[in-house]
Image (cartoon, rainbow, N blue to C red; front, side, top):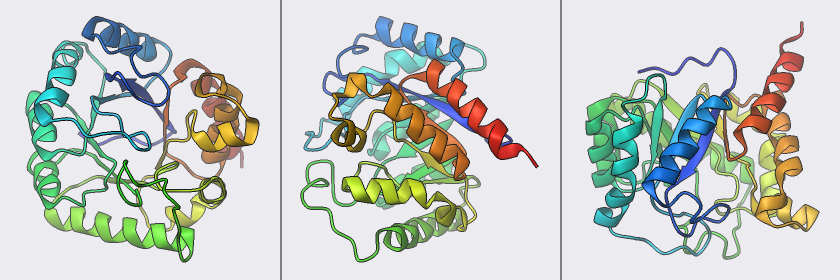
Length: 267
């Protein structure tokens, strides 16, 4: 599978977890998760990104067995639905292998293929692979994140990892600068403002600003009240070159993204 990027794609977030930062527990049961995925597709999602382990700041790791127990029943049902491209959001090669073996279409690794075994798995199935930048680990990433020069540091890392992926035989590499993963408010704002700089690397660009803490700090709002902030952020991302937007509020974001893309496309 190769993703067509003629227009910005909407990736709907499906957290099959009890502890994700924004919607942990809401879709923890397979039935609720499956129903939510189908609703997101009706609302305009182009991809469903399924995760069984929270990567919120200071979250704790779970076993591969527990992660698979959470996601496999959901994947098994959704793979039977036509026209629902599925992505597995995992940092574990064993989990990625099991899900891709079943037929999941995309790999989303928030650790950016730092694990050599993950590169081998992605290359074996040759699926579109999302390489995200994260400073540190989920447990440590928000403990005083610092950079020499934030944009150039992230670009250098993403370029190196993307080249490794291509050398291993992965045909479609997608980069993600990792909003909220080892970044301050100022870092996140700088990334969104300077997305065109990441486009210079020549890879499709995914951005996931949805409901993130940086907008909560600016607006003084909890995660569930950050829709307007999210809409502003995804609009800015599209205007600055984002190809895929990873969001929770699919219907609203799809509309904002469509308008932003129409504006951007005018000659």
